[in-house]
Image 1 (cartoon, rainbow, N blue to C red):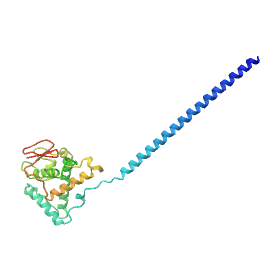
Image 2: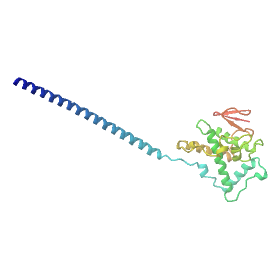
Image 3: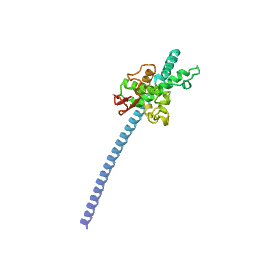
Image 4: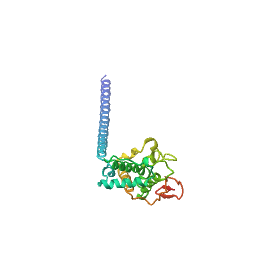
Length: 236
């Protein structure tokens, strides 16, 4: 009887030791998982903080407005002379000649034409791969069409929106002459500024080497006597 009681006692002790070992192992597993979760939470917090810092840095970027629009020519008489010369070179009837109110109308018309040309230059030759000469050639194609009798438009706006024999420059005939959404991105500020500067320069009379009979501009050969420049083809 006593031997049986000793056996029961040893069995009970064995069971208690086994349970104690299982409990300790479970506690170690729980502790390890807890430490792992804390590490993951710390890592997640670091990533969130880095992302927030990156967003804060991005929001500090500012978009530089084009200087050509903000800084028109200081000399009013020079502005008027430049614009009048520009329109006198164009093919216009008496009824089509622009009229001005004498209160800044000339300056306003000039800035509007600068922006129209800048939109075209940016769309056609805004990339870094295009040279300054190529950008000027794009602008001169527009001005050549204004003077060419094969096109019914007599102003830059008419040529771009309602060209003849067909509307030119993509969706301008539908949307009007507008900047693409990409032009508002901070990383495009330099390309936009180049387009403004080139348009301003050309309308002041600093043209490219194209003669007045070059009226085609595309990413493929068009017309005759084609000139290729930075992936853009200019033709007569």
